[in-house]
Image (cartoon, rainbow, N blue to C red; front, side, top):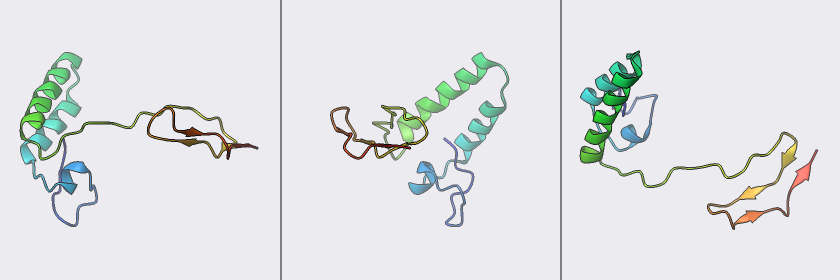
Length: 95
């Protein structure tokens, strides 16, 4: 988690900012983990932060967008719904 500017003037406006969660300590930890070159140490740092976020955050992330399909350039009109049986092929065009 990272929120370097919790003010209304912030240019980041990520999930943490949108929930007005001011987290200077976690932001410092995130910057430190980002700069850590040892993969094992960095993973441990991220796991520690993740536990803190799960315990204290004002939000819970339940679902993350996963792309179901790939479309090559020149193909338009494919409509993919939130589940795999809501795909519409009626407007597909190939250029």
